[in-house]
Length: 163
Image 1: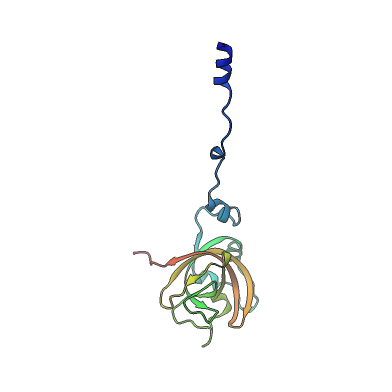
Image 2: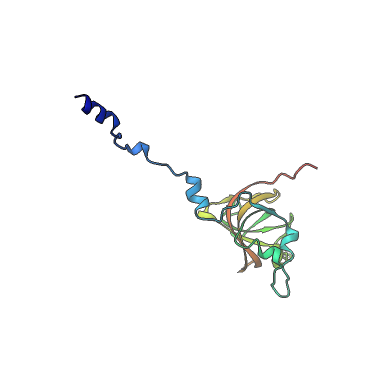
């Protein structure tokens, strides 16, 4: 009988469904789908403007950003009539940049389509900090051309760093 008791104690317990390993939703929805970046690169509009308008060629430093997760501070120009929120829009470098009078050059606009068609609230006067995967790809729309396309991940109000 003692042998049975030892065998019972030494036998592994039956696996419970609650003992299964868990996978974080952040890992499923972000890191397994997108390139992993420990810290997304904060880029500025001067960097984007280095793409040559005449030839469409980008210098090596700009090419290195293609397909990377980046952050950029910008203003939103919606592409749809719904002015409260949008899932597709343009990012522009300064307040008042408009696609009608005349639009910024294509190397100063980023076409964004939010992942999963999530929407972003539009605040015309409020700068935002966007995070997404940027691609050096020309995109034509009714509002003009952009030399950049971004799969938007997130946005938040932009707060300028204190000097």
